[in-house]
Each structure stands twice: as structure tokens, then as C-alpha cells.
Image (cartoon, rainbow, N blue to C red):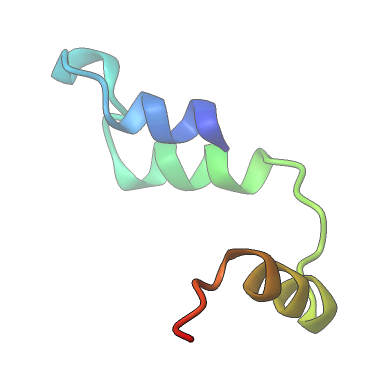
Length: 52
């Protein structure tokens, strides 16, 4: 995913994805773990700043 984001942020426009279709194809080709409620809860408990 990091490589994909960096590709979109390339300084040289010619090196960025040339269309939304190209970007979509790259996104669909990514292998990503499923993200369920348990993962979400764990992420928020780790990253939510405390306001106490």
C-alpha cells in the first residue's frame, strides 16, 4: 500500500498513475488482510489520544 501511495505522490507527473482505471487495477491487485471490528477496536485503543 505504501508503494501505491508514493506512486500517486511522485513529483514527476509522468511517473504517476495515468488514469483512475490504472490506479484501480493496482488497488485490486493488492493483497490485504481483512479488516474487521476486532482490528478496528484494537487500532483505536492503540492510536486514540487520551483526553484525560
